[in-house]
Structure formats: structure tokens, C-alpha cells
Image 1 (cartoon, rainbow over the protein chains, first blue to last red):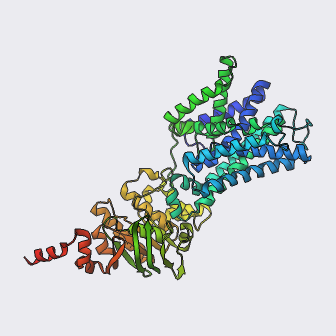
Image 2 (image 1 turned 30 degrees about the vertical axis):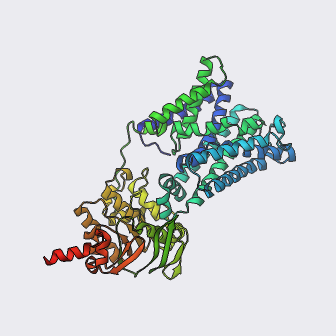
Image 3 (image 1 turned 120 degrees about the vertical axis):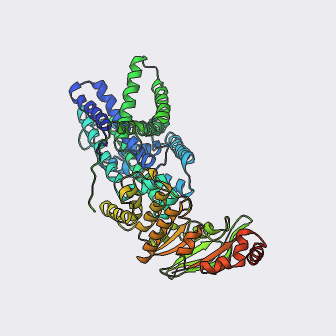
Length: 325
Length: 246
């Protein structure tokens, strides 16, 4: 998690200063907006596991995000199950959906854009299913009963919500850092860099990829559950819509895919940019997506390693030589 | 150590390998020769589990491993390298070698220590912290070898490790391979560089059009009319003989 250069340290510091400043600004608008951005950052971190470290660019993380949100909402609304249990169930459901999609896609050796298309198809099918069945509330979605309290995981105070989200984002990032430097992380990167060489070195690449999808699915499911608990309402377009999938991938790509900080920094940066544009251009709907597209194209063209890659080249810290034999 | 019996593989109507058999004794260095397109690499991919043979069996240390996936075969102690070197470009040299070491060392610190040790053994001590993408061809070939060794494999299938190297680099790698062999490893190598084959291999097999046409010591093989014709064309052996007499 440690920055490798002056530029990265500055970038991380800026993000932290912004996040800390919200405690002193007492602006509900900025708070609400940043709460949203943090939820998106969790999906972005989820995408980063498969797309960033594993090189499997999904275009359908909404499938896992929505499954997590719906699993939790159905348990609470339809079966009256405790919010904490439903919270855990949402994460498990996201992981299961990720593993399922991964198992099917990788069984048939799908890669690159074919994998992206299959994930998109899954998300779309799930979206249509969710808007058709009674258990998911059909077209009108599901609404949690407003009942603030620790046992229902609903909080009136936005500062509390914000703090909880910050802690969760930090936890997911810590897990990401730990994964990156584990055996599993090394194998995942090896699969991204060269699958044949990875296989020759004794790596069961199929298992590694499905495992990555399961972990990524768990994170995405977590983000879905967070959305549900914060806004208390979901419908198929909100949680299974392709906007979720796009936001999941665009943050890491702009911030730096395969880094620990990239997804958070990319997501925050984009949301700030989108919000700024909205104010400047008087709330023209959908304009933030036009802006995202422009930024994405520029990032792909000029910043293949994202902001973290760019910042990494500025003022590189000298690495200590270790000469132990 | 390795027994290959009657291995055959067709791609559509093309018989890439037919009825190929070979033996690799423990501690030996065995060459697999043959002109381009003879089916050497296909043989390797079948032995290492990357493609399934249509017919035939592969036995490794007494166990039938025909058709097992590569990671299972690798865990048993046999590994292949690639003709076109395939470093993990985004990782450092040490991390590259560690990917191999992770097979039997699950802890990062342990795997990195093994990687450092293997890297130093192969004379890569100074390059360990450099990104793998910055290596020269000779460095990448060494890396390929180091990664394979780090898995703890006993039998290494080397696919043209000498190709593209200048003679001084070839003799360096020859020295390294001999050193590794003396440490108790076994090699089966596809090689075109005769300097390497002649000085390393105790025995060699020659594959042509998918069939084993000769087997013997390298010195016998270069005298073999069948082998000479495989490389130089029909009637070449006779013409060479005449040339020698004239």
C-alpha cells in the first residue's frame, strides 16, 4: 500500500485530505455525493481484482453487485430476516454469482472482449429477470422499511454512514494489498501476463481465475448491500443496470488498474469531475457519462497505467539496496 | 525417468507426430533434434500435458501421466520451457522466479528467498530487482530456466534455450546446464545449435516428419545418412560421401 514515488504520495494525500475535510465541511450535498462515490469505489475495487490483477476485464460487475443487493433485500423484505444476516448473505450471493459466471466463462476459455460480452449478457439477463418476478418486487423494486438502528443497519446520521463506509473501503483496500502480495496474487498476475507460462509453472489457471471472480463477486456483492442499506431502495435498473458495470471499470482504469489506491482515486476523481460538470452545465442529464467517456478515451490513450502510473513516474523514491546474501 | 511410447498426434489431416517413442534416463541430458516442422515442439506439448495425444502413453517416474493437465505434471516434478521466452513483463526478475517457487513454498518470504537463491545460482544476482521486460534475450532465457528450476522440478524439458544467442552466451548456458545436471536434474532438450548438442547431450533422438528416424550419440547421428538427408535433402548423404572421397 506504500506509495513508490513523490507523485503517488501527493495523489494519495490529496484523496485523504478530501475525505477528511468532509468531517469539517458539514455540507449534506458533498457528504451524500461522497457516500455514493465510496459505494462505487467498493465495486471499483472489486473490478480491480479480476480486471486489474487478473487481466479479465469484466463489463458486467452489475451482475454481482445487483445479486448482493437483491439477496439482502429479499431476505429482509420478503422473509423478515435480520439485516446483519442478510448483509452477510448478500456478500455470499455476490461471491457465488461471480464464481458461477467465472466457472462457465473460463470452462469455455473465454478471454478479452468475449469474456466482457458474456459478463454484460449475464448482468442484462439478471436485470430483466429482476424486473419480471414477484420475489424481486418486479418493476417497482424493493423498499426496506425505514427503521434506524444498529440491528437494522440503518443510520440517520450521515456522518456515521460516511465513517462506516470509509472503514469498509479501507478494509477492502487492505485485503487487496494483502492479496497482491500473497501467493494467490502472484499467480493472478502471472495469469494476466502470460497464461501459458503460468500453466507451465504448475498453476491451475482455471481455479485461480474462478477464485478471483468469487473474491471480486464478494466485494461487488458487498457494494450492492451497502447501496441497499444506505438508500433503502433498489430496483432492477439501479443495481443491475449497465451504469454500475461501467462505473466499476472506469474508476480503476483511470486511477490505475492493478494498484491498491487506483480504484479509489480514480472513482473519487471522476465523481468530482462529473459533479463539477453538472453544476457548470446546469444539470444536463447524462452529461457526466459523456465526460466520463472523454476522460476514459484520454486515459487509455495517454495514461495506460492510470493516474497512479503517471504519478509513479514523478519523483520516484530510491529503493534501498538490500545486499543480504 | 521418462518413458514415451508410440505417441501420435494429428491436426486435421496432418500427422504432426506419429508413433514416437523415447526414453530419458535419470540424471541424463537427452537431445531431441530434427529439422523445422518435424514435430519436436508438438512432442513436448504432449509430454508436458498442454495437448492430449491421440495415441500413446507418457510415463514419468513410473506413473502414467498421459493426458494430465500441465499443473499436475509440474507438481510431480516435470516442467517445460518455451521456445519463445515468456517472462511476466510486469514483474521483477525475482518476482518472476518466485512465481515458480510458489508451487512448493506458499509463504511469500520463503518463495522470494528461494527465488533469490535460484537467481544467484544462475548468475542473475545483479538483475533480481530489474523488471523482467528489461532483460536481453540471453537474460530472458536464463530467467526461463530459473523459473523452471524454482518449481523444484527434477526433469526439465528445454525448448531451444540456445536459439538466438551468440556463441559466448551459448557456452555460458551450456556451463549452467551442466552445473544444474550435476546437482541432480535431468534434461530433455530440443536444440538446433549443434555446438550445444555435441557438448551436452549423451544421447539424442532425431525426429523427421513426425517419425523418429534415428537414435544414438550425437557423434553417431551426424554420420547417419538418414539424419543428413533429413536436414539436407534426398541424396545429400551420398553426394557428401563423394565429396569426401574426391
